[in-house]
Length: 403
Ligand SMILES: [Cu+2]
Image 1 (cartoon, rainbow, N blue to C red):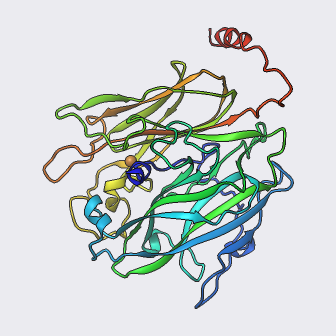
Image 2 (image 1 turned 180 degrees about the vertical axis):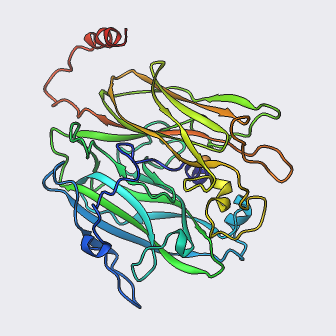
Image 3 (image 1 turned 90 degrees about the vertical axis):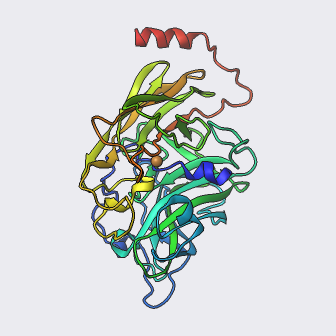
């Protein structure tokens, strides 16, 4: 059940920035340090050239490969293909994943797929990273929104096939310094779903590209936290539209911040028919994440992946249909301060008149979603001896600002 809950959550954008940003500045994979072993298996751990020395002069970058996993043939019937209705899918949970360090602070993280020899496995090669969600488990870890009762730890990263990097700090502006701290007590696990676009079964590795500050979190750095905001709250994310309703808005409950800090970034997730995800801080919209529709979608759309790229030759109602589909979602970054007690919630606005929703063979609208993944940097706890500052000044300051 836990797996189902995690698996429905997907696709964080690189909340800080334009997702098409080339962080490696045109360098080849070889120049970055990616290893290819023709006819063999590339090393599990590879040191890559770091990019964010301006953010922290000590940054290191380590790539870890997990697997191999077998991408099934699109002709085979897997349990996952029966559940999802998508051919060639496989789903699994990776546990005890090798960490890039025992003690460090993550700065960025990006997922990918590779073949055993180390070459890239992407959609031209018939390999689709449907989604991966990573959880840090262990002492003191619990999900920031849902707690421990539905999840085995703290969700901190997810990706779909757009393979957009996530930043745990203001790595481009360098104004807010924060990391996602990793300690020896943490274990990593991931729920992943891979999809083949090819009739040939093949092995692939899940790849995580970690950039991090080695050692304990620098004292002046904030603590990055990810908040999964979902219109089904801590449910399974899927909502079946009410019959006959063409326009509707789905609302999440509010998440109440337990800390002071800075809002780093947020990006929404919708299905076709979606118009926007609004993110509210104390009833004021702080981000309107809107979809870009296109005939050939490159973004994520669970059940309707097959029409999104020309390579897919798949059966079923989801074949290329010449209709608009969500290609990507806009994101917001550096939205200001966050105060303990602030209430953050989202709504997802749908209008099937404006953009057609997904439909089953029988013509009924299929599941929709409304999710936003918010990253914030929490102020570090005050030194033990120091008294907490008076909180009474803060609400006044806030209301003055928003007036
Ligand atoms: Cu979805």
